[in-house]
Length: 543
Image 1 (tube, one colour):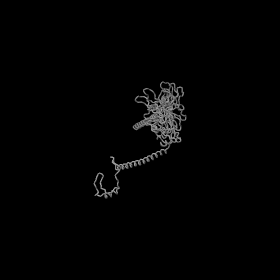
Image 2: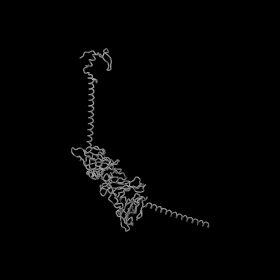
Image 3: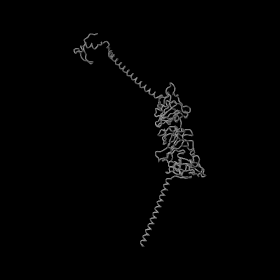
Image 4: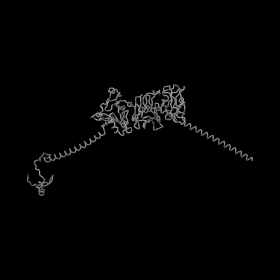
């Protein structure tokens, strides 16, 4: 019995140890799961915060962009901004977005946070609001904000982390890759998208805006207030005419989708800036010099200035002077043109004759490879001939152009802002002129079109008939000349040789008389043979 009792005690002790180990393993597994959940949650919510105080910093996931309070150079005003986390050797920030650009904080007490109504807001130490995202209350139950590697600041909802607001929808002066805009194509007024800084140290709204002119085909324009100061060419389906860049447009069902994307998504430092001095600048990081540099500027030449040569003038950067009047036009103010001020433009030298009874037909002069004028009217002509026909039949049509991926463009008013290219990146423009102005030019090709397609057909028919008639008369004349020459040669043989000997006194015999006189050319009458054949003796009386 004692042995059995010891065995029982050992058995109970072993069971207790097993239970303790199982309990420990169980607790370990629970802690491990909780740890994994915390890690996953932390990764999922990485970079999501509720507030940011001056001078703390929020970085995007891969530290490409930075969000924090800053002061522009030589300024003590504080703003919340986003910039590339890539500083040049000069230490300057490449700022791409500013929240409170119209109202700065004058000390370092600022806070960027989620407000009680769920909006993003900029506050100072006295709880005064300097800016708000202004999302409606029913959409603004938010948990935090995140800065993405695209430079986009997003506001996320509390329940599903869906985006309820983003800075890409409210840009300041910088166009970043992956930004896109949907524009109502039925609105013909300008659609301003970006607004310049007022000065290098003042990010408040300046005078210069850039946006889309929605009239088909769409164009990108830069305005100084309400006055255009730069314009690219129309969108041709692949790029903007005259502008080699990464900007793109899609037109569909009355909507215009304007965007900016890069083929290499890993390289997203390229961006566009509307500068405070009124130019559109393409900038990128210069790896060699370790600083931000300019890739392209809308002011590359004087011809980039909108309407530099005025109405009916054209600009070519390689010419001297750069401005000239279109064929058939002369300067409207010779004195101003002599001073190099071409904005007064040109006037027509010969009036158009369209519709005038008995007048010669107007025609079209072809100007090759240009940025076509502003304010084109788009027509749904399927071919260039249809486009030409429409403009011919409308006396108000002063010019037309056709490009396969755009269609037919016509102009009824002044032709403004024409630039001539030399690298085949433009479109051919046909300008209506009076018939008297249509001549051959050494630099441009004449394109003279009559009033209708039927007229062109008649010209072809008349040309063919005249050609055939001339050919027939030529053949008749040649044959007559040839016959006359043969007759003349015969007379020479009959009247005399080249030495002047005359044969006019010799008798001429008929063949029948010769046969009789030679007894049918009998051998007995044969006298011999010479260089002109056999010689016979003839016995006959003279007539």
